[in-house]
Length: 399
Image 1 (cartoon, rainbow, N blue to C red):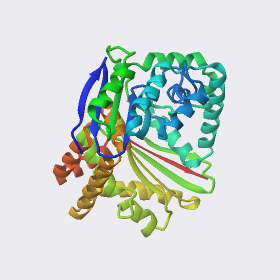
Image 2: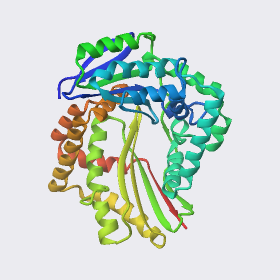
Image 3: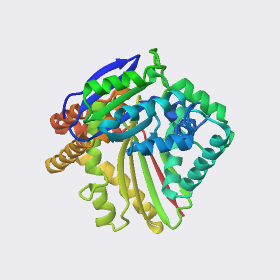
């Protein structure tokens, strides 16, 4: 993979990386995720939906037909930190794809009728998630573990959506979709000169300026939360606060691979193979500027709720007390190296990682891989022991 070229276009940060082949991926990330919802939980996610509902010159049908004419993957996603627009097209269509993304970025319209339609779609999405026991448990645990700007689901609540108005979303887009809050990454076969010219042509309406700060990430409760209504199953979710420093995140990520959800991991072997409680086990990291959390989840039959809870907690504690073997760490490093290699092979994932990582100040994937390869055994064990001694919350859902 060739080196990343960086420049600014009227205050917009741009990253270009050549990757030979017929396709190019574009990621336009805006620091305007759910953390910035303010008085309207879910408004960032609603804004993402409205980006596809029409602009000053293209109605909803024309916008989506134009994307289809380019033949590529045209999508968007909202997290707590960012809204990201993505487009993957043939190299010869990169200019037109950038033009369409610019149209969405600068000129999206929030009409009353389109807003009401999309609001119904999102409300149905929220109700569907709350009908799913693991989703309901995760939302409850998350809302207890965090306070303030991070405490609500990305999509908001039925009540917050019902109270939201089209003018609120329009104001949110105008306030946040500016160059100072955004990063554009282009990865693929298009040449650097052609990409630069197309970007300067289409992203010329904005101006530089200072990015605003983000609402502070604050924590809430710890301990154990119990809920009823598992629908015949028992579910456990454990949230563990992690220091939001790149090196510590990487160390905890390696430990989580050993503790967590792969068939060779300790928790999978404990829950499924030794105790025979269930199959579903997951272990992930979620993070942003000033916060990070490790999330461990598992499920079992409803009569095994307490045994499942004990299995999760005891497996985490034993790993802290006993440490990790050289073989376990060797496998964890190899798996993480594989993920970074896969990222390098995917133009789409690479562009998104470059854009979002730059916005949040996270190392480039190749730098993170170097940290993984050189990190001492003792540092990984110490990182895991440290986070388990800090803030944790374990939530149980059972009948």
